[in-house]
Amino acid sequence: MSAPKGGSGAALLSVVALAGSGTMVVELAAVRVLAPWFGTSSAVWTNVIGVVLLALALGYLLGSRLAARPAPLRALAWALSLAALATAALPVLAPLVAELFLPAGVTLDRAASLFLWGSLAAAALLFTPAALALGCVGPLAVELEAARGAEHAGTAGGRVLCASTLGSLAGTFGTTHYALPLLGVRVTFLVAAGVLALLAVSCWVWSGRARGAALLALIGLALPFTPRAPATRGTLLEAAESPYQTVRVVELPEGEGVRRQLQVNEGTDSFQSVWQPEPGLLPPGYYYDSFVLPAWWSAPRERWRVLVLGLGAGTAWRVLEGALPAGTALDATGVEIDPVVVALARRWMDLAPDGDGRRVLADWDARAALRVLDGDYDEVVLDAYANQVEIPAHLSSVEFFREVRAALAPGGWLAINVGGFDLDDPVVRAVASTAATAFEAPALVVLVPFSRNATVYLRRDARPPLPGSEAWRLPPGPVAELLGPLELEGRWALVSPGAAGVLTDDANAIERLQRASLRRAAAAREERLP
Image 1 (cartoon, rainbow, N blue to C red):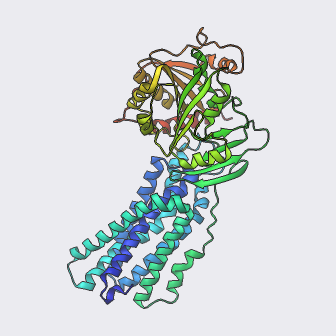
Image 2 (image 1 turned 90 degrees about the horizontal axis):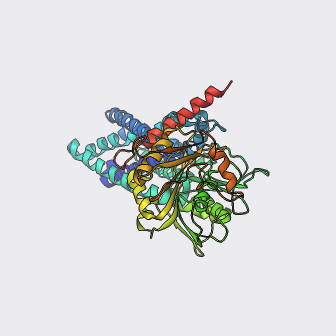
Image 3 (image 1 turned 90 degrees about the vertical axis):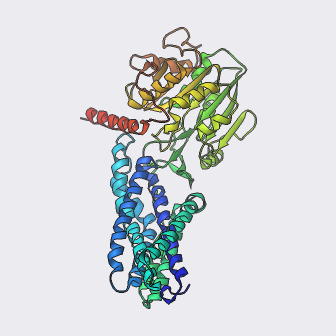
């Protein structure tokens, strides 16, 4: 690559394009480097994008001032050097900064405000230096391009903007579809830092100041890329980066009742799936057991046809497999958006392979899959979450629940796992009310003992049984023992259609309700403390 001041506009525009690509790497991978602590919710994305945009704006202003001074090429070399250093340092600094705002061991309800404000503070500290330095590139390049050809500023600016935008476009697709899934977060930042460092070296050479300054641009490559993951209880069996999240399988200490957990993103007290050696009911406190009750409340049949939306590692399958009524075989389809979760589940958590009454749709969105599946299910289980606490808006609307109802056989059941702390929880009430509206019948909500979960039951063309009624009672056995705690006063409620408003595809406040739910739980916890 020849010096831009020597007549090669292509060289300068190539620098601009690659710097634009690096900007998108920082912006898109930024959320992923914070995900093990704060998740990847829309609030975290908003915080990161807001910080990057503000830093870029400040960089544009700073770059415009530097462009008016002598030696803009040297200033460009400095900007790229600092961008390389700041990008290289991100995986090293992220654990240190994140734990300042989200200490290890904090519970999920207390972490509600920390996810929002902690991610904003962490993003500001981590990503401002790199984004600000990259923001300087554009104005400096415009100055150099204009001076090179003695042309109008608008012409030079248009060329630079075009090159920067094309580079950003390549960085956007490359980061999301290739770098993060294939290389992981650390190596993605390493590659981006290396490219920026090489650009800095080129600019220092062109400016005639190669010694010393070029070495500064390469220091980032020598940083120890050994980021610490959030602390986990038990033994880490395997961790992986997926297109959606950080995933890990943890072996718990002896005596925990279950042996393994599949955890995603936040390093708190939560998990996505659990595993024990034998199929069947889990110990008290695990909401998955509640998914087996509809099969016992229904007429005997040879097979129970189930669709699980949000399969995870297949915990619901294993509970149903070992706890259905005698003589009833499980015919199960599962939809899981994250193929890495499915791969880890098959290695560590006995997720059944396709065939023999089992079928997994990996890398499928639940609603998209629902539209193409055959339907006529005896039960649909909805357990789809992002980042532990977030029900996706398109999976909580009345339009979606109508699609679920249409996929059920006559008398078929919908069982929804809803993260909630009591019957007045705003998320529980809104989801139950919306689903009841779609089913045109009341929803039965029960609080799962020793957990922060509620299960919502609805039935196509029928009502769920009321606790204590004849239809509610089951033959003596382990499954019947689940009913006692659910019958207690204050542990169940019927929610009528529209009772707490209706969430729609067009107007859906589920994210606001989820934040309100966590704040409410945190306030209740504080009141109980001495």
